[in-house]
Length: 135
Image 1 (cartoon, rainbow, N blue to C red):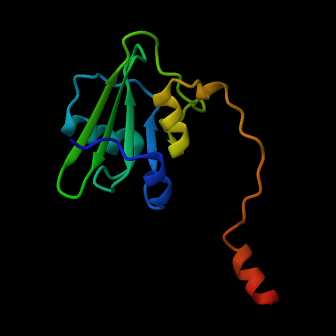
Image 2: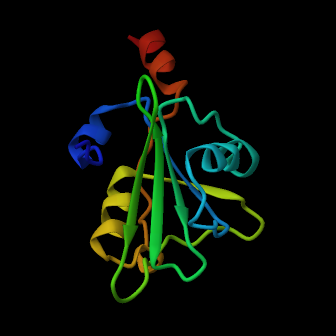
């Protein structure tokens, strides 16, 4: 049985991204319909090796679609009570990119919509080239 990649594995896979559709999806959708939703709603290639997260209307079910070398893998989680507390999505956005830690928190029952990310330093792409010029 193949499980979801661990947080450690996702953090080490620099090319893997996690996308969540902002609109609810019919949980009767299978591999092909979800792959089409990836193209139409999220605007990504479903064969790209990224994780695509979909929620039900009630918010008590999640499906995660992933292309794994030679076929799709689909994880489905239904809560017996309560709903998943998903991140806030900007008005008009059709999808949102999640960090691996955010997905782990959602699956663990943490309300990520209430979390506040503090400002952090991010080195720009051109900062490295400037540092090399100054050396």
